Length: 225
Image 1 (cartoon, helix red, strand yellow):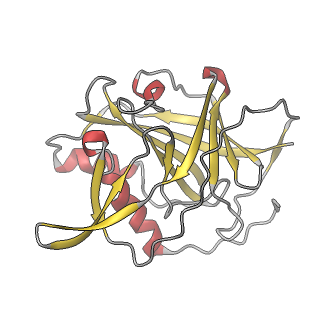
Image 2 (cartoon, rainbow, N blue to C red):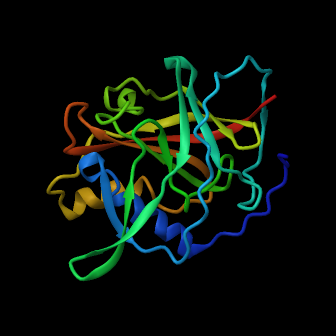
């Protein structure tokens, strides 16, 4: 299951793809046009949500190598009583303006995991996106300002391990519609490659339309036993 040693091999190509994926991810909070991945990973059926159970303390954990970091299947923020299913986000290949691209679609009733980002507890950045307006609006609490620095985020992986992250930053709303180069760069900074084990949540803002993006960044603390 989880191991306490770090054997991290980074793929620059995959990391750069993370920033490209999320820059346009929430356009209209519906679909996005992105560069075509070289290969599309198989999407697992991971939509089942369970209530977090009372567990023991948090044991420190070194960031896991990519091969050992599993797909997240549930996100919980205990302070908010928030328990959300996490599902891999799929895409379809389309032609846009004469170019072959992919179009990603956020799930309506779950948080979407960027399949080319890190796995739960893995070295690098786990990226999760969700609607704040459409469907069940799973990340509306982020758009409404309820997610705060210091709160724990529990990320359960497909093997049942509960990785604990702590929120260290919540961004101000960053313009999406008609964004300047500076604003695009500010958004990209929240998705940049990293050696740390981080979790980034992304949603639109405000909670009644989508003209901006909001990001929350959390650091890996350990694993609950």
